[in-house]
Image (cartoon, rainbow, N blue to C red; front, side, top):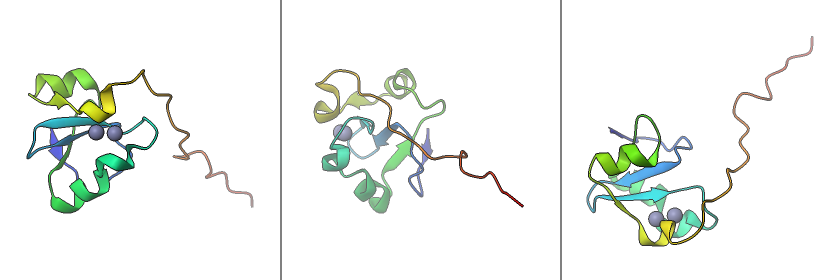
Length: 86
Ligand SMILES: [Zn+2]
Ligand SMILES: [Zn+2]
């Protein structure tokens, strides 16, 4: 577990003051205010970034994030658009 100083697309984000883990992949996860958690300094990430690791470290499911089916991975643009033409 490590503190998230700047949100970088981690799937599972722990809220350390409530010991709740959020799954940021589901739609409308903005309601969980992940950016706000980061701002308050209570957002933590997991290494590796998976749910078992979060639970193992003592976090409980966020009711809002986990009462639905597994979300589909969002599209990400990391590292794929760096082809330089020269
Ligand atoms: Zn949540
Ligand atoms: Zn959520």
